[in-house]
Length: 419
Image (tube, rainbow, N blue to C red; front, side, top):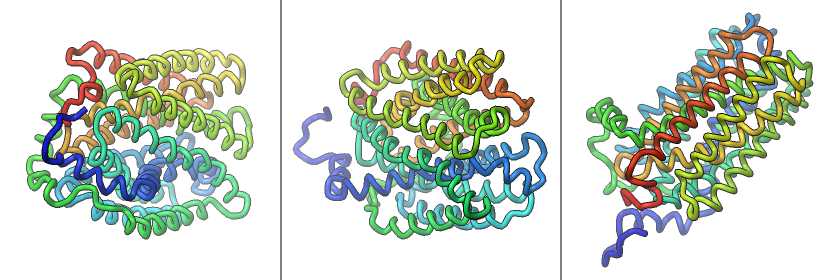
């Protein structure tokens, strides 16, 4: 608990608008954080058809995911300090405009190269919503309550990837793959209009007027802390595995095991159900058990399920079920890893919340670039490259989480550090 003070703290002051607008704020923050998912999940069932239409070579379409992740990862490093300096709403609005333009460009693309370029711009715009939504959570909440709120947001926003592939499949039944990107244009416009209802969570008095000075030095100073590296590594390695899953499953399920795009959408949705369930469990247990402990549990589970997947994929054990079961366990670990890694990294930050959120997000999606790109580069027509990459990432996440546990000082979220 924060120390008792005769004057309300800055954090308490910023809690007040959240209390008055809790449902509206929760809904809009969930929509903003969902941009990372809807920008990719909606078009996953169309990847094989897009490859044929654009004349893409083997493994080339996975690079549209990698290009997106490059823009998403690097863009966050700019949006975080901008959000600390100018508040949250204005940068988010600018990002949404870029997202709309990029989505329209994807819909009009005539080659794989053009598609990748427009995906980069789309990602630069989308990441403003995600990185600053996380900073808004830090503006409004602290300690285990921030981890609980992050889990709640992730449960709500999981609806996007849950229905995304299924909606994409339905669009493909009545229109071409280009209609999927026009749908994203509409989503961007609607979210931009809804932004008017979101209260500014970082008033001028609490902004960092020096946020744009020495940005690189700020990031390097954050990386000097061992616990920060542990949290970043736990989430970053896991995201590498997640995006290997995102890039690899359309071809593993549809091309290799000859499932329909509708069946793929259902199997993808199964993993999102697991994510929603573990986020709810995490939300209920985090105050009692601590976010570090739950982070370790999730990372160890990801490592074991990744190793199991590598074996079943390499030796083709169990057919489609041999892929679906360990993949379900791996992606379900999201609920214990991501929210707790983000909350742990951001504990103790106030005026640098945007920069910390940007660093965490850039690292996570940066490893996603490697995970998805390696699936394309190592593609051999089987699920084996996907299984190998996911196993390596799971083990890396577990080692990072254990390094946090081994460092003295306890859980910052549990001890109330930085509040």
